[in-house]
Length: 459
Image (spheres, one colour):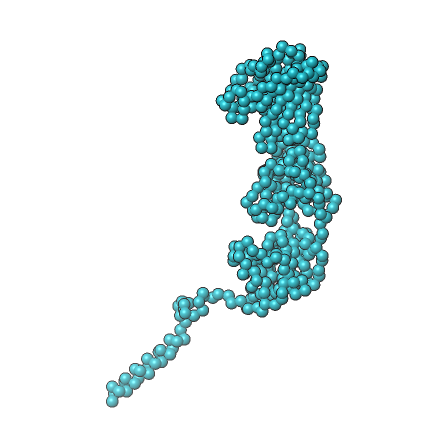
């Protein structure tokens, strides 16, 4: 009997202990319950709206639409309504845009949409950091993407606040410009043409050796300490509301560093030369550190390349340049009909560092000399041209009076090698001497690369 009572007591005690263990917390998160640990549960929203101005998407509907996009796709222009949950950044300087998050109800834990680098009311730039704040009700107008397939957001610089707490402002209308120019030294693009060209570039493409003309609208910075460069904007007419081109980290004339902040000012007319990009496919401007001023208020840099169609057909006494043709004229002789032609290719395919006197035919002799130049004239076999460098000389001597010498010159890419416009020509008896004079303190001037000589005798 005692054994039976004892067994009953043991069973009751075990039952009590098992019941108490159910109240003891587990020492770890049970993987079969609430998978993912203490993950925040967002309140689900109800999608509303059609994305039009009259019926904007709410955030829930906009997110559902944007999340279906693949890389490279966008929504086109849509309207999205919500409340600002948090403001990440307001840029009031260079870009004048803001990045913030909006949701359907900021009093609840709801999913948010990132408004990335977006403009203010009327598509204008932000000018103060307090122009928006958490709690503001906004309608955003613009283009949205699913960045890398997992981040729904507005496309940078392609959205703006259509309505702020019920207030709407029509977008600022820019005065359209007329594209002009060819992007060359002789015929620079205006800003309108340059923007149209640069906007066609992909994010990794570059346009090199481009010339762009405009007026300085706004100067962001002139950095004297480290880079000696300036960052500013140019437009076709800074007295009107026109689109601008961003000139980033650009050097002064002759690609030299800026020495004082007042070397440029708003209103200056400039020609900028160098490489241009469409940063991230949506921000056209100068490639940082790869442009400089070619011209400032009509003053050109010294040296540089020669335009394909030089502006001065008559550059000095007895010297004229037209395209790739240089003509030396004896003003004291009447041009006859007898000519002698010599092509430099007759010298062969090998380079000649020291050019001996050359028989051009009919008693004409060509001699070259270094004179006070830094490099002696040379013949380059690969290109079949005779190169007359800065301050070097060639002389043609014959047994008859020479009235004119015509030089057909070489071109490489956009550079035309027709010598300096400051070159001198002198006729003396039966000879003519040309010196490729270059007197600037820096640079090597423009080479004269001769492919062919044509000598015209006097009557």
